Image (cartoon, rainbow, N blue to C red; front, side, top):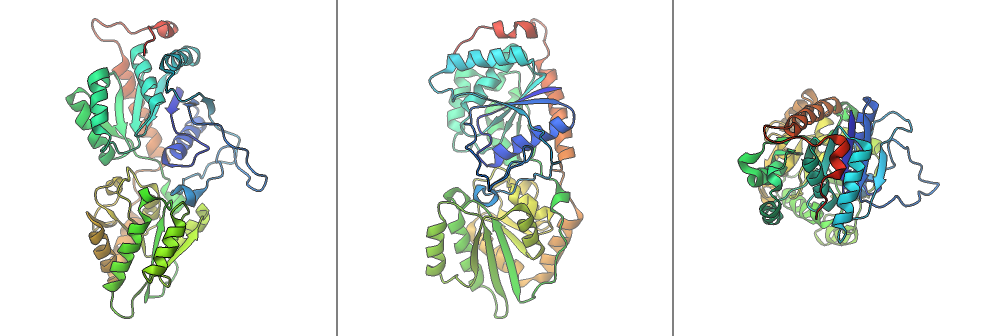
Length: 413
C-alpha cells in the first residue's frame, strides 16, 4: 500500500506528534508498505559528532520533549522518504498546486493527515484529497476545546465536516470537540498512539517501606504544569503521618527549570523534590523499577504517552480526570483520577498512606497490558484506511476522478 503521511509537525522537533508519526511510518515500512511523509517542518540542524543518531530511531531529547518515545526499532537505515515544503501562509494557491502534483506523481492509496491545533498544510491536504477522491484518514492529536469556535466558523465556510474523509482522534477527549462539529455528518473514531507494553516491562526492586517514590516525566514548560506539581506535593506531604516520607523525582528539562528550583527552595521541598534533568529511555525504565507512583499534573493532555509508559511498567498513575489519560487509566484500577489539583493531592496522600492499595494497582497494571502495542495500532490503522477507501468510493450521481486526472482538478484557494 502507498501511504502518504501529511503533518505540519515532524522531526527534528521532538514532540508527541513528531515522534508518533515517525514511529508509525517506520513500522509501516517494516510491514512492507511504501511510506512517505509530507511536512512543512524545517530541515534538521547538523548533529554534533558527540550525539550519534540512528536513521530509524533518531536521538531523542527525551526529557526536554516531555515524553519518552517508544523507539525499540531494528537498527537499520529504514526510514520514510520525507518531502519538506514551506509553511503555506500567504501561498495557499501554490501549496494547493503542489499537493495536487504530489498526489498525481506519487499516486497514494491513502493519505493519512495528522492535525494539531493549527495545521494549515494538513487542512489543505485533506481538502485536496477529498476533492480528488483519494482515501484520506485524519487523526487529531491535540485538544480543540479552545479552538472549537474557530473550527466551527471554518466548517461553516468550507463545510469540511462533510468532506469524504474518515475522521479520528488519539483519545475520546480529543474526539469530543471534533464530534461536536461534524455532528451526524460523519463518524469520529479513536486511533490511540502506539506504545509497546513489552518494551516497558520492568522487574520492581525492594523498597524502603517508609519512603514513597513519586516519578513524573515532563517538559518543564507551563503547559505541562510543573509548578502545579510542586503545590500538589506540598499539600500531600502535609497530610502524611510521621514515618512516611515522599521522594519526588522529576525527569525533564525546559524553560521553567530555574523558576522551579527557586520555588522548591521557597516551599521547603529541597529534601523532597529532585529535578534530575534529561534521562534516556533505559534510565527512565530503571527509575520505574523503584517508583511507587507516577504523577501527571497536566490538564491540556490529549493522550499522555509518558503516563501510559509508566502504566506499562506497572506503576500506579495519578492524573487529572479530564485528560486523554483517562482512556487507559481507569480510576481505582490502574491508578487514581481527580478533577482538580486538590484531588490530585488527596490521591497522592491516599496512595502514600496505603501500600496495599499501591500494590493492588501495580499488580493490575502488570497483569493487564493496554491495547496500544504497535501490532494493535497498525491493525487499527489498516481498518481505518479501509473505511477511508469506502468513503472515497463514488456514489450514485458522483463520478470519482481518475487518479491520472486528479491533478487537473480546479485549484482554488
